Amino acid sequence: MRILLLAMATTVALCYVAGTASAQRNALYGAGMKVAISEDGSKYIRFITWHQVWLRYNENNTGSYRNNVAQDNIFDIGLRRSRVLIYAQISPRFLIVTHFGMNNQSAVSGGYLGNDGKKPQLYMHDAYVDYKVIGNYLSVGAGLHYWNGISRITNTSTLNLLTIDAPIFNWPTIEATDQFARMLGVFAKGKLGKLDYRVAVNDPFVTNTAQVVGPAANYNPQNNSKAYQGYFKYQFLEQEPNLLPYMVGTYLGIKKVFNIGAGFHYNNNGMWRTEQNDLVLDTVKSDISLFGIDAFLDLPLNTSSGTALTAYAVYYNYDFGRNNVRIIGILNPATGGGVLRGNAFPTVGTGNILYGHAGYLLPGNTLGEKARLQPYAAFSYASFEGLRDNHGEKVPVKMLDIGANLLLEGHHSKITLNYRNRPDFTNVNNIRYKPEIILQAMVYL
Image (cartoon, rainbow, N blue to C red; front, side):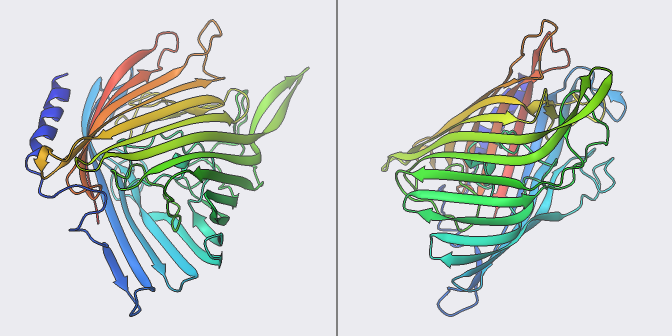
């Protein structure tokens, strides 16, 4: 509690030393680092770079170790994301996108050798070309891309999130059959009236799972099937751009947006498991079938005071095969104690997930003229087939996040304070909740 109060006090103090007015678009930022290569500006190259730095207090799951020392709680500093994005419109029809960087570096993880935090490798996030075939109706492209299916936040931008981070289950195959939520493939995207669509056919990456089959389904390392995905949204109010695949998390009151969407991801024989058949143990393959339906609302409420509302809700139905459950701990501060060490919890698996978040942009004069404040809350409820107690009853995974964005220059410069109430599944029959407090500093140019 003292840590939380100290972090809150730090955030409030920073409100009064903020140096610029907030909006998603800021006059000081302008068009950003954009270089025209034609007199009329139709040909250009744009450069974007950003860092997200986390200062975190984490009460670890039971039995966690850091550097071979038992640790009940940890205060650490890490780089959640550090990226460079370059895209160029070399003609009205051609677009090239290059996006590289690194993620999740701490003093104990993310390093080049995999067992420490030193010298993390830069790697490609996106590398694709895009050709406009029929105006805004149809564009096609190919390469390593982020034109994903399932939901809006499966395609979310990390530059303008409402919450401190995505809930991770929105990228259900992350680092298993994809490369940090990207795949190599071909895609098509466009607009048909108010309907915005994206579809793709991809080659899943070889999984990092062992050649050992168990009774619970796991990713099939012999998978050679294509992955098909798509997302379709109907835009009732203002239209959102789709030049790039990254969807905005919150517009901070500059647009009126209300969308309903649905999407899918399908990969034949993407999973495998064992099944007892008389005295023979058979290997059974099954499909990855993932579906989502969601709604997104972003509205200015009072134009004179600058208040705005952002709300999002999504339902996922995931089928990864019998009893599949995947445990993930983002930027995990612990190095030992099993898969449930540090801040890890059951994140993805066969079952259903409900998630929603909402935020309110306070009036522009709340903190004077130099900053804006946007409190938010997020909640998820997951029910996985393979997560049961000793009585055979399913144990839900519930997560609550409460936080606030201090917008110093819109999303270009912001500080976020987030409190998470995280379940510790070390004993599935006795779930305990642990606090995780993160103070994030983010700048993008």
